[in-house]
Image (cartoon, rainbow, N blue to C red; front, side, top):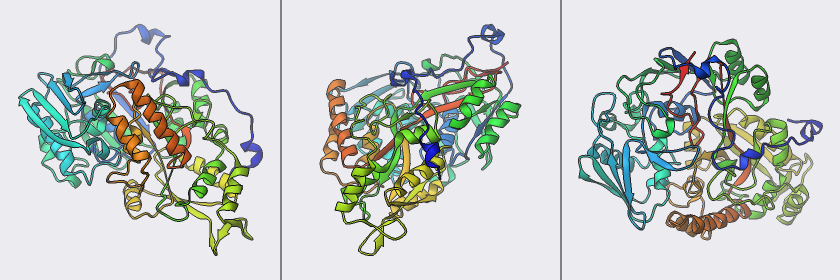
Length: 538
């Protein structure tokens, strides 16, 4: 609960660079001063990076939480990569590719000499098997991945080093999706395992191999002979590090303290309140504004009373996003002005709609028949306006943000209950419609994150049935011209915001801190951890 005096403290100025596509705040650590900047990288050593929460799985298709993405990017490679500075798709396991005229066929020419860590060579047959596996397990893959391959029809082997991936309808953003960990390639030996066995027994072609996968710690070892980093990583050959340890340190203050004391060399998810002290202590910050879906609430409008758009709009108008930024976050973050972050291709500024207006919110609730009761909570037909938000503690600021939103809604007579869940509980809860809202975000450097989040096509965990929105989501994915596609994406964003298909709150900024001895750590286009091959310790 946040006292009103604290919540109304003066607004801090945002860094103007947040509006620059994919390049704001850099994405590399600062080696511009000191002897280390001019020294040859040293081989050896162990990098220990503290995470807030245990990675859910080493299966890249099962979970896309921060910990899982950080770990899995070191174990698995993708066909292509997205350069974080330019946004362009660049070669990785595929050295080149062609796209047919209507973007329904993508033909990849594979790089020579690539092997998985068990020695199995990468071939077109292996790529085909990976896509076949995605379809075979479509009911189990992460919801953020499923829409990307929903129109997949087949993968065809052209020759041992060439494979064509085909879709039943145009799929313009497919290459961006193919660059992410969810569509990274796993070894045939892993594909043969039952889905529920691919948690801690996985094989990839990445620069590190999995040693141990435990609830509190994941340990990786350097893979010798690795020599196919993507060009955007700017490194050739083996990783410099011998080992990488991802250590779970749930308490935010303890994570930061562990870095300052030297117990760990890097921490993810630096709490907004600790950013200034990290800077003041001379430690390094690696930051990148996340493109994609901003943090916000998904209303499950199939549940009463959220089936009434007036109630959804009232909830949205009761949220003060600037207050959230000032009270919970830091100037490194930006209040949402659309459903997409401002660093996302296709972003449309809808700040005139995404606004705080509690007076209008109260009028909407009055019109909808929700009146104040004795305890201040509105009621209608004997039922209180009490809503449940399911949330997963994968991000430091989530709980404080939701507690503040709860206080803001309470001022308008809306009761919000916070239900913390595990990753597995969230999926089950969404399937069974246990929540009124789900707290989420989605990092993707392409506006197609709208389709993968809000399409009414299966699995449709949010029970969305918007006959105006759906054609827009499908049209943009089939439009190759960027300007024309952006116009469609703008229409989709306006529809989502005006109908409160999503309630945007703030744009995510990834903040990783490292000790002075860590060099070369960078973040990718989607603000996840890049392959750690160029990282070294002085």
